[in-house]
Length: 266
Image 1 (cartoon, helix red, strand yellow):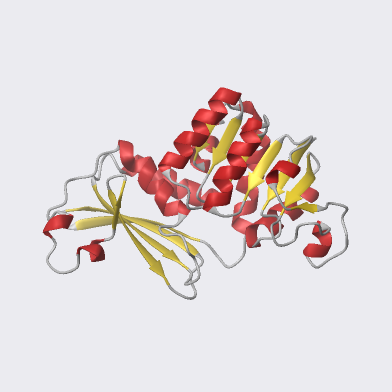
Image 2 (tube, rainbow, N blue to C red; image 1 turned 30 degrees about the vertical axis):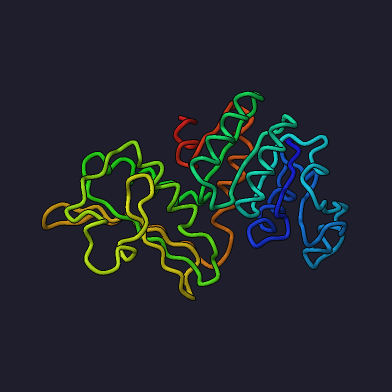
């Protein structure tokens, strides 16, 4: 059995991941971390019956006897949680969005030094992973591209982890030079979006969206759009997260993107 520590266990996605771990035959939920529910039984914090798992307030108090730490918290907490777990020799799965390329470089270096694995994805949906894999396949042939990121009005980080990860993964495939450079824009240059790893990214924050990511490739007189839309529940992220939990211990260092992990299995 793989013993799992779940950070962010009472959050929107964390609760669904925790329930899935409890319902699996090869994984056990050994500990949970939740800032607002510290000291409470996790089952009761979920609004149900007690399950005997007392929620810790800090990651350092929840890593004893754990094989894999899963994080669905916030960018600042996720970085600290990952480095603390790595230092304890625990493998890490990061589903939290908002971490930067520099954060991942730091995490990768620490994981390699400790000889543990890390799997991080801005989106653990299998269909989102396929959209990212498709974009990476297309990019060398269609160099004109921009990303549009849609999320709920309450989402604080911009762009979403899905869009940031896509832009940073595309950094190795040079984009075509902009016909009008950003600094030559007449009017408001900010309206052209943020330049992330060489790709323009535009973030919309409006009610009714959960997380949608759209990459538009273009050539003269034609366009190709690849888009992923998430629904209103955390269900799409469960299968990919469990897959990462089961696979992470076979790796050393950082694997970024669920599509990378899926392709490494074939």
